[in-house]
Image (cartoon, rainbow, N blue to C red):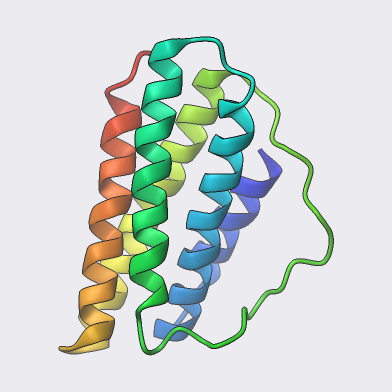
Length: 143
């Protein structure tokens, strides 16, 4: 779960609105990458549907962050090399993504309080809501 661990670490270290938005945008992208890679190999209809719903919410969260005026125009941590697909069981992937989504929701909610009123605050609230939905979808799924 290297990609998700790296995303979690970046979110935990993020300080300030721009840093949180940057890390959150990348974390949503990482969730999409992990889910997308696993979706292609799963044969379980239930898992495929859950992952499709998760991917939709992760894309919505990413898009909400992209509309935040304080999001830096370039990533603060550009990727150095392509990351290999995550390996693991569906249960392990669900647990890792669910944990990351809780952290995303928490960091974005905290950023919303410092953002003040306006588009940044709305973007943080919208993205946090998407992250909570990702968690709820995966926490309710059979592991």
